[in-house]
View 1: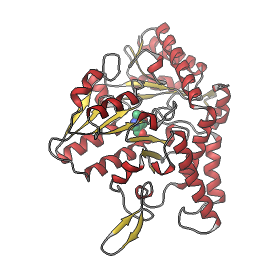
View 2 (view 1 turned 180 degrees about the vertical axis):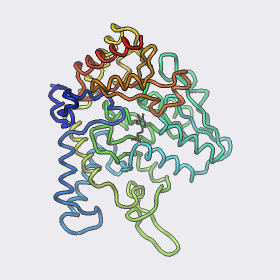
View 3 (view 1 turned 135 degrees about the vertical axis):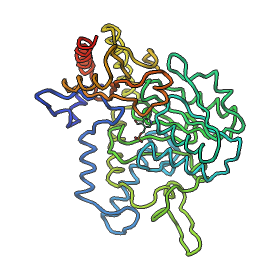
View 4 (view 1 turned 90 degrees about the vertical axis):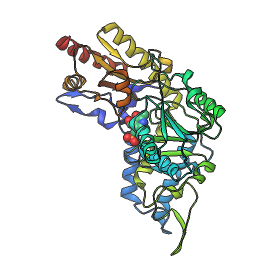
Length: 409
Ligand SMILES: Cc1ncc(COP(=O)(O)O)c(C=O)c1O
């Protein structure tokens, strides 16, 4: 039985009282809270077997290496990757996407080639392509959305041509909440151009729903540990071994080489050729514990829980009136994130007033300025849910929003 109320007990931060009141954490889209299991796992590495990985032939180094590689195997199984070698550890989703963008720079991009991204992307999946386009003087086309906040499929045929090198798309929007049909997108793109790479930003998908990268059929998938109960400073880039092998390394240094001579270097194969230098060992090991925690909950249960919360929240917003949110109003294609507007109130005022009740939401453009600009909305106050969010938390949000409405309405 999935029970968010008892799940809350696993998150020490939720035991905190500030000014005598409990915390209502509604900013998991920015970063999630961490369960005791993850904190302990990381702590255990520092206390019991701190050592570098891959280098030592002594016990603690072997233990650290085994735990590090175990986290890689757990991550591979979690997203149904073909093998642990398809998992590259980076610092975050942004670095995973930059790794691909940088490696593409070393590919034979020629005039007339182009890249497609979408208007609903986080800056992480927008700016790297914009900058790559500027550097190589190639066009970056933007895939638009319908008034409901879903990708406009009618436009895809016009966007993807024989010259399209890569299409970058988010699996779930961090502002609209929209869950995109990734398999359908990949199929359509590959039909239009089998050589076009598809990169999926799964920062808001892998933490919240079952993901099967084999079923998606994309070339690259990027996500972050810190949004799925794990430590900050760890990201993942998934790619098939074939595709990863064609990419040039992004950073050079120790542990990513098999031979170095004065005049040349032979790199290791993926994933190690992309993990130069000493990695964030404790973070990766802690991330493994986060993956185990989520696996034990069951990702379909996580998704079902969030879908219920989305339905509940939409009902409460409608009942209250005066509060609007961006994106679709169909819980089946929406993640647990609401970019809210209250008539007459600036999003920063909303967030500040909510903070007085210990209701924590984020205000701003949520690193999606092109999207906000295209909608003519400068900023929003965003409330987002996760495994520990309850209907009671949404009720607390509604009570605080009512105060905002009374003050500004
Ligand atoms: C959809 C999406 N993509 C990318 C990112 C960037 O993630 P990170 O800051 O971990 O690189 C975020 C973070 O909010 C996001 O929501």
